[in-house]
Amino acid sequence: MRILHTSDWHLGRQFERMPLIDDQRAFVEWVVDTVRKDAIDLVAIAGDVYDRSVPPEDAVELLDVAIAEIRNAGAVVALIPGNHDNSPRVGFGARAFGAFGVHVRGSIDRNTAGAPIIVDFADGPLAIVPLPFLDPGMYFTRDDSGEYPDLGVERTHEGAMRDALRATRDQIGDTRSLLLAHAFVAGEVETSESEKTLRVGGTDRVATEVFEGFSYTALGHIHRAQNAGADSIAYSGSPLPYSFSETGPKSVLII
Image 1 (spheres, rainbow, N blue to C red):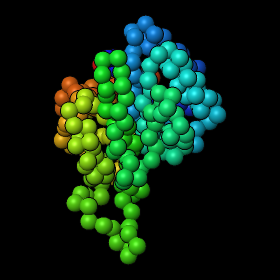
Image 2 (image 1 turned 180 degrees about the horizontal axis):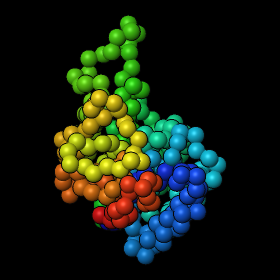
Image 3 (image 1 turned 30 degrees about the vertical axis):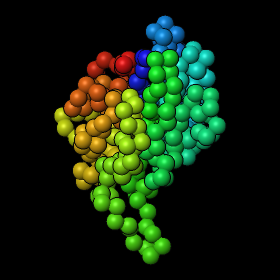
């Protein structure tokens, strides 16, 4: 099977004062054309589909068109919200959409955030784990006594991801797997000025060990395409430059 990994569309964003919706529409058309020409089976969108939590109407319409056209072109869609998105809004309709080949997870509930979705393709099953951006301030909640329960992890982004994925690997077993995540991976990762800080004080960083055990981890958040410690853990980068510091080539990844 062939997977097209992309992220950080930031639909609705402006560059300085210039709207980018026409450029973003051209990118969506290119993705749909690529799905057809390259026989893509799955398009994985790893967060920050919108530029802000309440996106403008033309951005919402463009995402609606993108998903419909990608499905019409023959590919399954897997999508997660990033730190720019509003998770419940992006996750609207997820329960129904899955039946039509569109797998979205906006819920950050501890019981469901890391649950795999088994999808059958022509060459066998794939376990898709669409892990939404887990803001630790929302993921870790106090119990009835007003205290945080002891979960055995720090109340950071990494701790939230470790907790959400605690049972996932056992549920997947030997099935090949795709993890979608939106995170700032620790190490030599090249950043740009347009990436919003996830957390102050160093607690935004996520160790590569969090992604061990998955066949491929499709990352979002960093706008430059690059590996994050291994060929199987990678950022696709943003499809367009969103700051003057983004001078490198733009791309998607096909796996």
